[in-house]
Amino acid sequence: MNSQSVIFSFSGTVKKHLRRGTKLGYPTANIEVEPDTPEGIFVGFATIDSVRFQSLIFIGKALTFDEHDKKAEVFILDFNTNIYGKKLLVTVYKKLRDNIKFDSSGELIDQMKKDELQANVFFSTMIE
Image 1: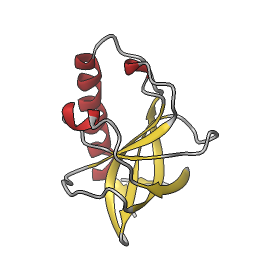
Image 2: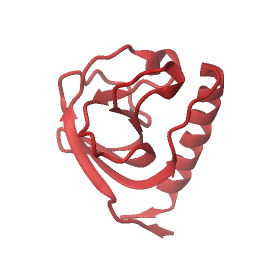
Image 3: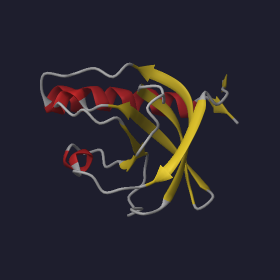
Image 4: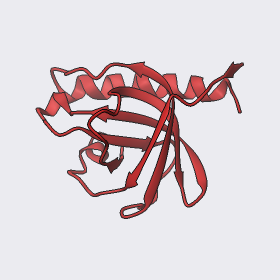
C-alpha cells in the first residue's frame, strides 16, 4: 500500500480550448496555471462541487503540437460530464514523467495509455 502526500495544488475555471484531448480519446478540463507551476505528467485528484475524482494531469506546453502557452490539462478518469465554466481544484500527488515532444499524435496516444495505466496502479495502492 502507498501512503502519499500532496506535492502541490492549484485551481482555476475550466475553459474550452481546441478539444484536441477529446479527439485523441482523452477529454481534458483545461485551466490556466501560474508560470512557476511545475511541469510534467502527474497523478492526483480534481475536485468539482466538493466531489473528488481520480485524475491524470498534464502541466506544460503541448510540445508535440508546437504550442507555446503553458496550461494544465486534467483528464478525469471514468468521467464524462461537461464542466466548462466550473471551478476545479487540483491536488497533485506524484509526478509520472517529464513533458516531452513526440514525433506524432499516435506516439503521444501510446504514451498516454501507459500514463493512464500508471495512474490506475497508483490509485489502486493509495491509502487515504
